Amino acid sequence: MPTPSSRALAFALCMASATAEPSACLAGHLLPTVLLVGGQKCGSTSLHVDLTRSLEHLVHVSPGKGFSGTGNKEVAYYNHDARYAKGRAWYTSLFPECPWPGHGRTVAIDSTPLAHMHGTSARVYETIPPRLRPQLRIILIVRNPIDRLWSYHGHFKNSEPVDDFVATVLTNTSRCASNQGIDPRSNGLFGALCVPESVRGGLYAGQLAEWVGAFSAEQVALVSFHGYVGLPHRVLSDLGKFIGLPLITYRVRMLAKRKQGRARRELKAWPREQGDVKKQKNPWREAVRLNARDNAPMSQSSRNALESFYAPHNAWLLRMLKLPKYVKLVSSPVAPASAFTLDSLLSVSK
Image (cartoon, rainbow, N blue to C red; front, side, top):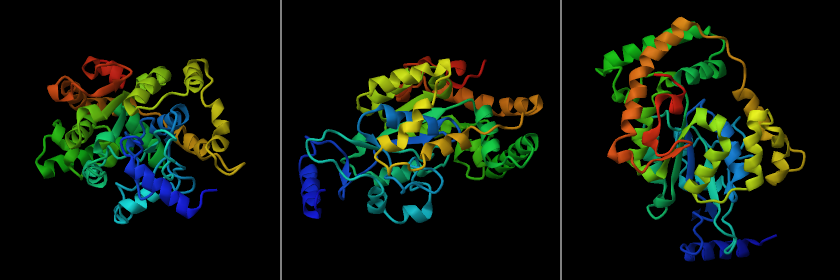
């Protein structure tokens, strides 16, 4: 086992040879430079598992140091004031130590849902040192916003009838927009903090604009949940190129068998492969179970109300993808991003 002095030497060599060893090292630990920012209830848990199991040298938060109830997926640093106040050194300490020189590039991922929270991109910008900002890769997965809100209700608000929940959040959103003097059909609605989280999570145009505005289009990848479910192997291949890490080919081929109903069988081997304590409880099985609970059916009238509300925001998103500012945006499984249609991106027919 490496001694403290040998670890210090490894860290010093890592910092001294930044060009030869491109792992993002700070204070002897890996600073996450891949952020899977959501969206919330858009398949980010599944995508996180697939990425960390299918890309070589992609590591998550150290075992036992993730945010309560999220396994090794989330840290809740940027979106949690008390944890953010602890500073960058504390955040970085939650992730594995820097690799020894010659080990090859290792990248850390933080999959805390941030996209639905206005202003978190500014915290990310301040946390990442300027020399490491070019390495940052941001992934946003989007889903039909009506299905996303329905899933949100089932996960967080399932004691309230779903139709009552929809009526309440739409009423609150309308009141918020009126109080703020904002057109509820405009892209500016995302910035209104009084908009319920359940609704704001489906305002993808505002989310994308914030992250591309804070960084650059080539550092952001837009993934269709619908496309990910249908073509997981293609999405993982695209994201592997985006992050710059090689695929573990046989695992990606296994994911391609989802259409034959074989998804998740290989998850049983997860803890041992990640170096956790033998026979440790699988941290992902519970997360997948909680994210797949059955929801009460939503009435057609509630769906119609949500469709009417989200239609202008979905249209905003499609128009944005055709603007010059977003030409270099990475997208999957459709590329370029401007080629997305409403159905291929959000599984919403025109």
